[in-house]
Length: 448
Ligand code: NDP
Ligand code: 2IT
Image (tube, rainbow, N blue to C red; front, side, top):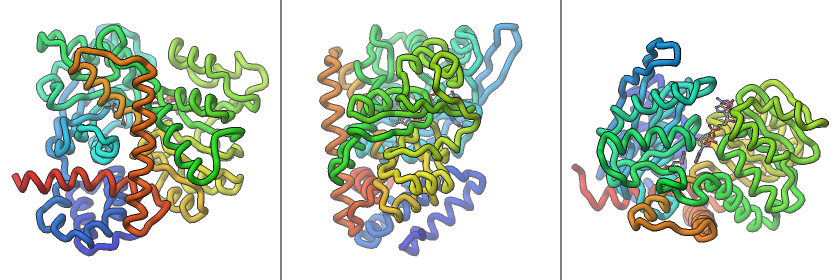
């Protein structure tokens, strides 16, 4: 697909020329500019006033050295990042990712997408993302602690409860957030909601752990119901077995679906009887084991090396919940061939652009990440509210708010798509609805 606006086409070229190696960032920007072309055509002031040019350039990028000592006394040096992308509608907000693949392009694409996603939640949060090429796999708790403390020794200068509020993402869960928050508190001598995803004993919100996976299924449920379908009796395939995948599996099962496969970066498990989620939680949340251990403890289940062939398993609903570009065209073709009728993205940008096109051409219901995985950051914003009030809501109260946020979000994205002549296209609808609130705020501030 091409960008149907001459100026935005040129802008895309400039984005590529400015940072030629940042392929993930180009991919994310191109998808958004394709969706925004009809808006820019209808509202030329957005180009004239510089909104579009500012939109694709982070307000600030922080890049730093993170030295740390392993248990043997050897020194390692990793790279840390925080991209503060857009603060038009609130403090920068977005996760931290610790994974060896992390580089500036990946953090920029995530920060860019976060800006639209956060706007879609309807809550006052801007977009940011950070992380490091540090790999927590196989490290001791003490090593992870020293790394997190060193990371925060630099990051604390740039964040704050009204400035920038990080959270978790791949490789950053409750343990890492605990070490990061502890170090921030030591350095600043203050106890504020500067991070979300905190433990429940020190300011975390009930239902934050579940929020992304649950929110994904709430969004998918809205999309399915509008098409006269549901999770009830559906076979579901979920990639990943981390925070998002586990709670997507829990909610999809509660809504009547049968999840038959999950994965990690080495391979996937297939359990025709339905995934035993207690076992997955024990392996992943307690033992930090590989997913293949599942088959040692669950007779009859199969393990297959490699990730991409998980999409060859026949299913009705696919929920990619691992990482970017994990669902390529060949995976999309296999899903379509096997009669899959809905795909809802739990990970950020998991489908490649050609896979997304294939789903839409085949009439598969498609929920794009910015909309369907927004439940996590939405509950993060609710955690910020509770921290500011020095009060906490019950699990049920937070879960109810999450449900409302996800159904409002579905409605807004569908209506925006319809308004711009692309009914049913939630990719365009989410990009447009997320953009408009940010753009109107940027226009109100004038060029600074
Ligand atoms: P976790 O670290 O808890 O889990 C990540 C899962 O994805 C693991 O099973 C991991 O396997 C797998 N994975 C990671 N990288 C790769 C890779 N390169 N190839 C194949 N598999 C991979 O992270 P989350 O569950 O938090 O995040 C999953 C996705 O959801 C990410 O895209 C994240 O950006 C997105 N997301 C997360 C939110 C949150 O609240 N946590 C909110 C919204 C989106 P392994 O252990 O082998 O690495
Ligand atoms: O991609 C995401 O939305 C997240 N990793 C969650 C961000 C947050 O601030 O809760």
